Amino acid sequence: MAKQFAAIGPDHQGFIERQPVFFVGTAAPDGRVNVSPKGMDSLRVLGPNRVMWLNVTGSGNETAAHLLQLPRMTLMFCAFEGAPLILRLYGTARMVQPDQAEWADLYGQFPPLPAARQIYLLDVDLVQTSCGMAVPLMEFREERETLNDVHRKLSDQQLDDYRQRKNARSIDGFPTDLPRPAEPQPS
Image (cartoon, rainbow, N blue to C red; front, top):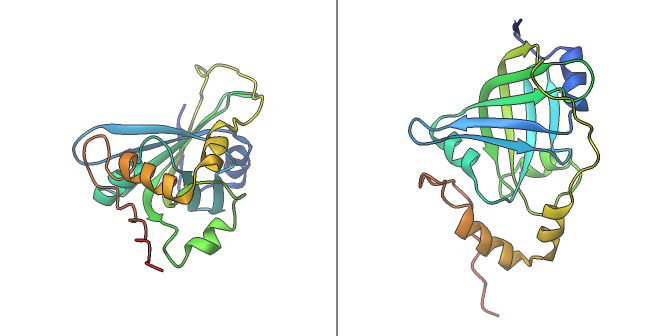
């Protein structure tokens, strides 16, 4: 049976911090709903009503595009080991990018990840737990390093080019507010 809470309690926080994967859901007023899996030690609980997560460059940038139009976000965590549980965090989110003043302090709370692209701050207005009895039991083996390996091989220019091709617009054509790379200065 689902239970609702106004804040992230200590038991909720412990559960969240033990999960190696979580899912992010966002949607614009029109177009597709996006649900993305996240891992890589990329989430921090900042308080009873605030979390943040670090996003790295990937094949799309749906979350950024959606939040520019409608700042609601849901994070979902599932117990794949131990007792069954699903925990969802609902709230309003905003994006912080590397060219913003607060980036350095926020980014410093994560292990350095190549191609870090955005940090999302979620103000949580509802925590909901449910049974999760239909979620299969699975054993966590290890994080995949493939994405980090690919990013480490790219020059800054190659990464900027990729982001402009693949991350500047959502699959529905919405802008993502991705910063444009600095123009090279003549010497």
